[in-house]
Image (cartoon, rainbow, N blue to C red; front, side, top):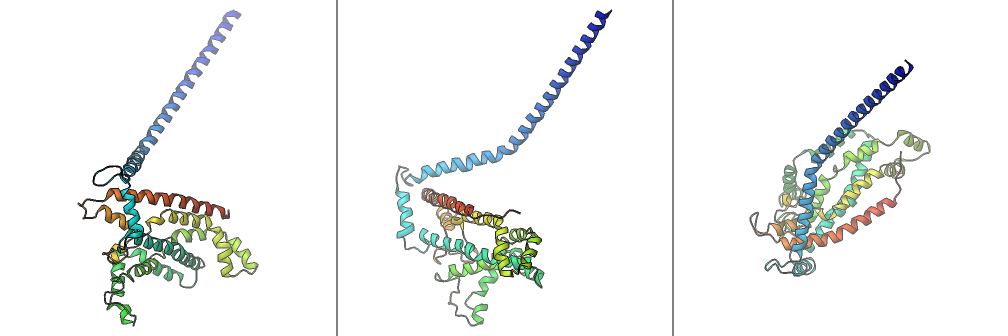
Length: 328
């Protein structure tokens, strides 16, 4: 009798173990199926950008690398494209040469770094302090971002024309207008870019300032710090992570810096207002959209620009990392 009871107990224990093992296998199977479906979903979403990266980055860059060392007429291996780039950069006297494009591109870049960013920081600080009438002031500053660019460009062109508003106010305007002469066209576009670019990063900078703890500012006021000291010694260090990110992104695209030259000065070559970006565009579409582009020359230019841009951006990022950031 005791042996039978013991056998039944062992049998029930074995069945329980088998049942638990079956449940564990079923759970693991469901978990594996969930992970598999999850991976299929993730890779399905990543497939398009990966294919795009492989085709439009690696394949096109490889083709550009090969084309840079080929003669555009005979397709033989040659350094003629780099020689043409050198002539465009240093020897060409054309108003639309690559050398002029470099000069104007750096003008737009330094305008962004040395003029626009300081103006945006000062304006954002006054908005952050909520001075009297700041809402109307904020609306006026945002108007260039709200209104269409074509409308602003049209109004600005009428202002700087030979019979425009500035001429009526007594300023000496050339007969072709400030946008119609090579000596003043680029500088006039720089003024327009500064006017319409004040609101460029205001949302991000104002948001960063609004995150500054009020307790820190109140403690500084008790110590007798003024608005200028508050801005320099408290606000700027505490928004430095946001500001450094924006500056890094701007420096990453310093060779793409450009202004609205097609809106304000359509004939960029004769007006000496071309930039690197427009020079590349013109070389690709030299004879219109259906024309024969100088792809080999542009490929060589792209290689040289990459050689200049990559170490420059890495160095700038390294310098930004040396500056301490405030955590709060």
